[in-house]
Image 1: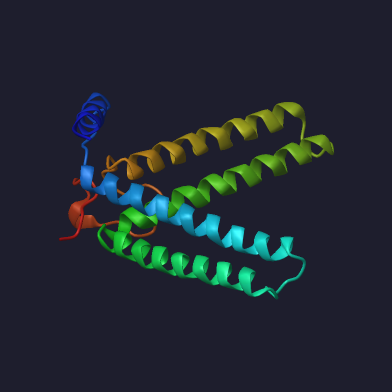
Image 2: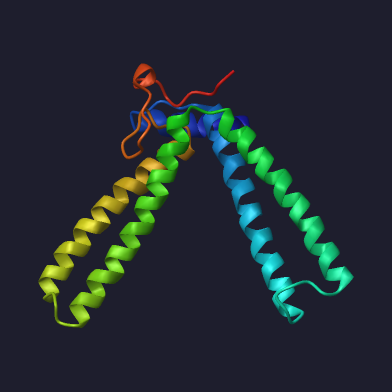
Length: 173
């Protein structure tokens, strides 16, 4: 763990950024918990559909879904705790970056479809897609900085912390 921390610190210094290991740890835990919640809720739906109805009729299926749901609620509580350990702007910035990346994908699909249908020329669509990709790269870089504890301030989110704009995302104590 110390080797990874030193590696992250060195990488941040080479990029001219500061590094906060606590923020990185909380963001990593939060991401794991969100993935757990998404995986379990999807698996619950698939399990019920696999056994043939929208409601779990068999007691075994119902029990399995209930046990999974309990784990999901526990993970959601842990998510709230992890989010509560960080400055509000960090979570808002990560959300804004993820939403921006999702929107960029939709815009790219829309532009490609418009090009296929002849609404846009190939050169126009390439120029638009290039612009979308450039913005998506900025979003991805900022998201990476937020998740790795290297973001200094909010670039895309709604909630910026003016008192800590020079600080690397802080952990609440």
